[in-house]
Image 1 (spheres, protein in one colour):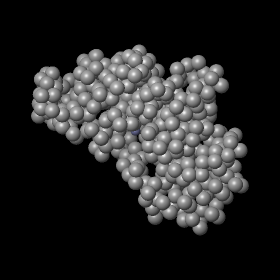
Image 2 (cartoon, helix red, strand yellow):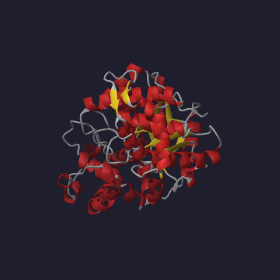
Image 3 (cartoon, rainbow, N blue to C red):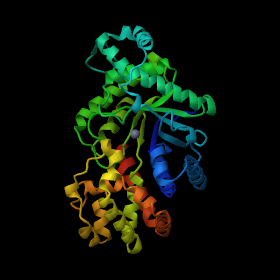
Image 4 (cartoon, helix red, strand yellow):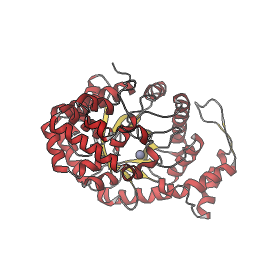
Length: 417
Ligand SMILES: [Zn+2]
């Protein structure tokens, strides 16, 4: 079976020009003793908005790894696919994030629910999971509720998995199951029974992406209580451990954190919990690289600065339209967005400082950052110009991409100096 390494990072490269700089960050971590498997991910929505094909991501990943002489495994992730969207990803991907969010809450058949409950009954009462201090109490009614909410989604995950396996062959790809794009977090108890369902469907899931408590907004820091998150995250890890043994899931099954970029408040917590239990992690970051392109172009000045100012001003006019598909994962205070007149007066430094995620920098504006995060469509509409600017200012942009990935993300997560 194709196995994902202990540490892996999901990197999005919407316009396909930063793969090299992203890989450099992974290589740099390797030099410091942290082996990270790079995974290039791009969702169907991103492909549609930009006008690319999944095969383009494969081409880029193959090219940059070859050029850098990178001989370790790397993957191309069909991010957030479902039964309707998986087809065009099958050939070029070797990592599939099966998104079951839209199936959660739909009820499976009575027979299926009954069969599940029969097998799950023995876990009712006091559920002792090694590593969790307070034993969890679970009633059979509670398990029935979980089955009603999640069993249909697990069955769908199996259908999608089978479809991929039929084309790609057994063991030729990594499977992730994601449930993060929903309104309510899953508790550790729910996670336990969801894993039981996936085990029963014989899905060799290597990464699982639950929704955690708190807000995981795109491109900005975590909103919530990091200590609470830490307890929840640790309990989830213990659940995974136990579930692997109980349900025969792959022994490298690990947690995947979606919208994982920029969660600086959580990295020390995640880092210390995975260290404590010697666990792996998959951290999914995507749009943060596009933001670095914008910052790099701002720093380049001249036409490049003018271009990103125009992108921002255009996105101000289209705030509603751009934000709509991302409503669950952004929180923009529109009254704090700098006006067009204001931004047009800014120099390179001021624009870059407003956008770059340096907590404590008085110029940093998380509202503007989130808006630009979802505004990549504006650049896609002027693709030739944009790509030309990226190429003309390659060095400056690549430096921003590298520093963001390596210094602000990898170093914080793995406590590297
Ligand atoms: Zn996600």
